[in-house]
Image (cartoon, rainbow, N blue to C red):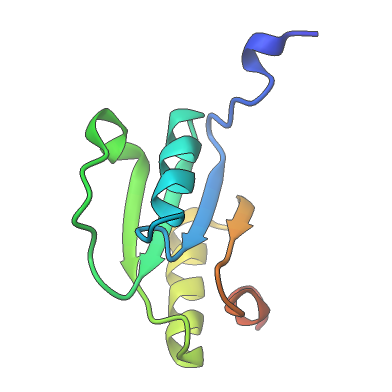
Length: 101
């Protein structure tokens, strides 16, 4: 077994809602370190510097308590990345709406 690459996520895409909160920022950082392109949604733009991992992280403004904003986020992500999302980490009920048309 090649344990060196066991957890590599190169070329994969993850969505993290609330990704700039106290817990979310660490999840975003870990995913980026593993080579994952991370799409982060939050109400406010980030004030966090992820250093060399910054190019792996993309911000989308979204209030996940508003159903229409969740639909808009979903459409933007699918338009940009297609159906290639492999992981979704949601800190609220938004996963109910995110990929349901």
